[in-house]
Amino acid sequence: MEILIQNIKELIQTNTTSSQLLKGKEMGELSSILNAWVKIKDGTIEDFGSMNTPYSGNFENVQLLDATGKMVFPSWCDSHTHIVYAGSREAEFVDKINGLGYEEIAANGGGILNSAKRLQDASEEELFEQASARLEEIMRMGTGAVEIKSGYGLTVDAEIKILRVIKRLKETSPLKIKATFLGAHTYPLKYKENHQGYIDEIIHEMLPIIEKENLADYIDAFCEKVAFSPEETDQIVKAGAKIGLKAKIHTNQFNCMGGIEMSVANNAVSVDHLEVLTDEEIECLKNSSTIATLLPSAPFFLRDHYPPARKIIEAGVPVALATDYNPGSTPSGKMSFVLSLACIYMRMTPEEAINAATINGAFAMELGENYGSIDKGKVANLFITKPIPSYSYLPYSFGSDHVETVILNGKVQ
Image (cartoon, rainbow, N blue to C red; front, side, top):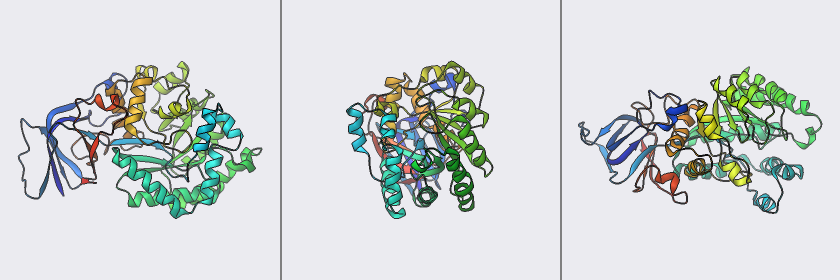
């Protein structure tokens, strides 16, 4: 199928310097074409340009789409989610309203352990159906590439069950999906006083199955006082590296405790959360290839500190934005709302937020060569908005749904 979209009010994120990861002042520069067209063929972007020099190729068997008054964006690249989970945790939402904090809820058997119990009791088919519905939801809101983590299993069987569901989602969903093994999300109750016992189970029982069945692209751990120390995380990351899993690490959500330095030393693709961050840690990231992935909907939901995005960007560290879609701290996969929070609470400009949610998000999943921008030869993952006055209107009008048409792999969904 060939598609030609014409009369586009503005074509966003074009020719991003040969698909480079953006940082510093580059993040504030958003290339676009006014009054544009884009041609799609065989699932990829064949060409694009201004209506002043309209498409001159063969129109036979070409589906024409008129985008008058509308904008075209590359699909969002959501590089941090936990979409495979069972049920919901609105009771803990009420606990938070009544004053309990994240660590207090976890200490009372809530949090990750609550989700783990529900997931262990759910069948693989139930998990697949629930996750498929969530993928459909985020696709309709403009997401075209997504990373999905395990981590709500915390037993060998349950963690492998999650990863098998993700593998099945990869095979059936039009979205581009990356899988991350997060067995080190927290310690199961039976290992509360025997951390090394659970680490050994991850390394010697889970990882061999993951390698044999090719179930993951990355390895992750929650490096926090309520979970894994930097030393424990280092041990897990190094074991993952031996079977070809690069690191993407949860760290600095609540405490600065060496997680950044450990992640950089292990060449992590990204460090995610960063609600708290020292100048020394920013300097450490600046001198590395690691991407800072910020998840503002988590502190929004938890009423916590927002990451110091301005300091990170101005230091020259590349920033990505992601949803953290999960049942406990971010029960939403709406990327446009993440952009709104980034602009409102983290003082990112709309240009920076769009770059962080598209091309930099793609690089945070090592997909930047084929996703995240409007470039010739890239996969045709994009969305057409409803009529809007400017691209800044998208994060400005945070309560509205502006996505009208979704195209993934060159097909209208």
